Amino acid sequence: MPESTEGTTEFFIEANGTSPIEDFLDGLDLKTRARFRWSMEQLRMRNVRAREPLVKHLEGDLWELREESQTNIYRIIYFSFIGRRIVFLHGFQKKSQKTPRKELELAKRRYGDFLEREKRK
Picture 1 (cartoon, rainbow, N blue to C red):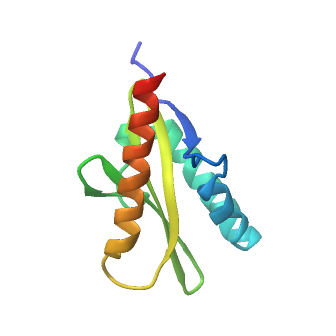
Picture 2: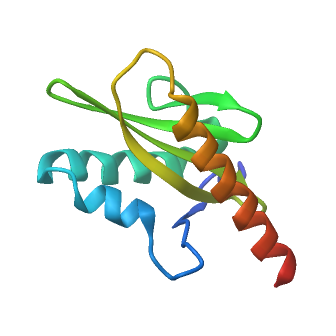
């Protein structure tokens, strides 16, 4: 029997207890939010087997979950952690061809914060 690729998903939590991904999703219209939830579930089920157009590799361990809604393009940056855990770090509306450096830098900071907290557990 083939091994399951399904994993778990979680949202990055800031030190003050807020969830930037929840805030990002809450700011979207209902249709786009529902599409993102569906995409997140597809990613959870496919895990490392997920490919374009659902996801795209950015750099290092960072990937983006991709979603479009009418004329807007949205992304959530995430990474896969030990034990098939998918951690969503940062969501934003994409307005240029390339992922803006500031969005990537913010995701990298949260990635580092997450890894530091995991070490202390």
